[in-house]
Image (cartoon, rainbow, N blue to C red; front, side, top):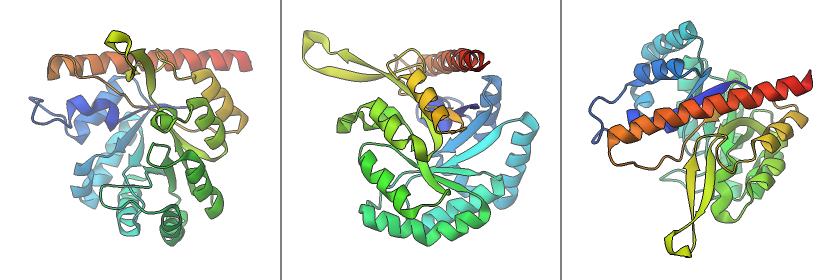
Length: 275
């Protein structure tokens, strides 16, 4: 498993432009990924990518190759025209995985409609060799997501496993892992902890560095291994705002560094057991 970083994990260096003095552009983010020691960069829910020309995308691709960083792409929704637009971007970047979600801000199709739309664009993705990874998340039950993938029955339509996203639908992370593992083509590593609120009334679901929370990494890695899945693990963060944008960005760096260190240690122990 290659360890990667998503733009979602670097939000305090580019997204909140009203709070950040010098937000990074896409090249700055790429250099940060390299600097932090990751092997892959998932450009996910990053609107500026849509404004880049084919030549600009190809130049960026070459820089990523020079730095030894594998690129992945991410968006939201399964509306055919939108996915085909992102397929063009994927082709220019020579990306082989496109993470998306069933819903976007405009379209919330039924499961049947989502399946119909995906079947419509599937030949284009198969021809380009780009796999679609539908992310597990709360608006769509995991069982419905699996039913879409099983019904279409193509190696080019799989699942982006993010075990924490479905907790609000009362789906246990380990169950999400187990139920989706045969179809996983991408994996988000985003850790979390439950903490009781002050006054002992209710709980909060909070983020944590990967390996420091309640995500069962051993079970995740073991289950993917049993299914023969060799996918990238992309770090995302549920990072709390901390006093100021500068302090939050600093905490973001610390969490990513801790997450990568924890993952390298975990993967190393798995390799040692195999030997």
